[in-house]
Length: 206
View (cartoon, rainbow, N blue to C red):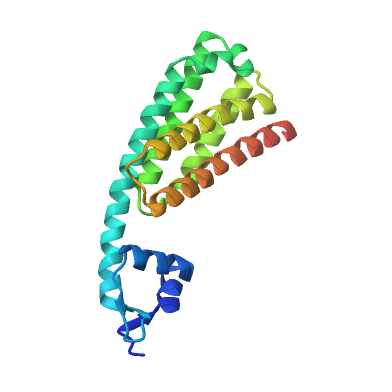
């Protein structure tokens, strides 16, 4: 077969998806496809390249829309008093509570910057900084490692709940947008969580 043309299995390998996914996209008209006289699907390499470029541009735009809506929901949930029922939060004085609310906003801002970037090149350093901040703040206000973990998970759970809410009501249906967002959010927040645990362990050993 000419290198200008790709079979279904070849295009699936190049795009890193299952052949059945390519088959569905082709049948739904989402990716440019041609049929041989025998009914086989064939894909022109230059058309697929153009399609990828357009799809990536749309994905960035859709990602921004999803993220903005999710962050709005999360800010609302945090400001509406959900924190007051948390046992770890009840141990804090007013100043410490304000600092924790600020930590929640810092997490959202860092995630926003990370998810909006193409490379996420500074994500590791930002996640470590946030994790260290959470751990130091928790120890300063005499929270133990379990309570510090609960504090962080409160903000992460609110963010994920907001994402699910946006997903359920979304006009954005691209599987690329959702899989990419959830994968990157999980990776980033897991890194923060690990740093919190590592910092507590280092303090205890020290």
